[in-house]
Amino acid sequence: MGNFQKLRVWQIAKDLAVKIYRLTQNQKFSRDRGFKDQIQRSAVSIPSNISEGDELETDKQSVRHFYIAKGSAAELLTQIIIGYEVGYIIKNDADQLIEECKIISVMLTKLIRARST
Image 1 (tube, rainbow, N blue to C red):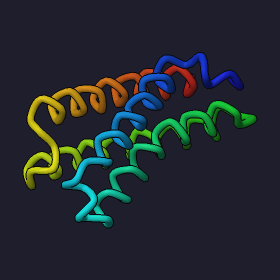
Image 2 (image 1 turned 30 degrees about the vertical axis):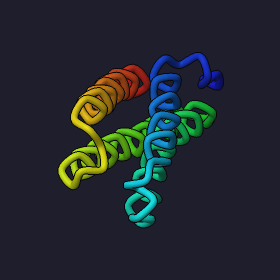
Image 3 (image 1 turned 180 degrees about the horizontal axis):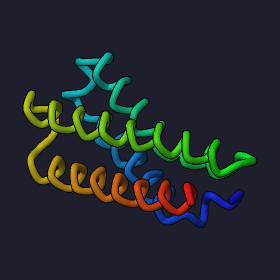
């Protein structure tokens, strides 16, 4: 515990948040501030909760934050799907981002199991 930057799941989640920020700079998102803000918040929530959880005193506290990060990954996945369906995100980008959300979710499940034992 306490060295979250070395966690591969944190690295992937942080990179995904950066991708979301870059993606939402396009013209389509600028017309929908509410959606833009929401997708950015959920993307940032994933690595933020991983880092916060990893810095906490007990595994029980850590696991709680990892579950929150997992929920944020599901929220982001949903928003990516919606963004694609309303025409804000092109298919190739959406497919890649969705896959990254799924990978993060699987990695968080494994981290939760490891910290729960």
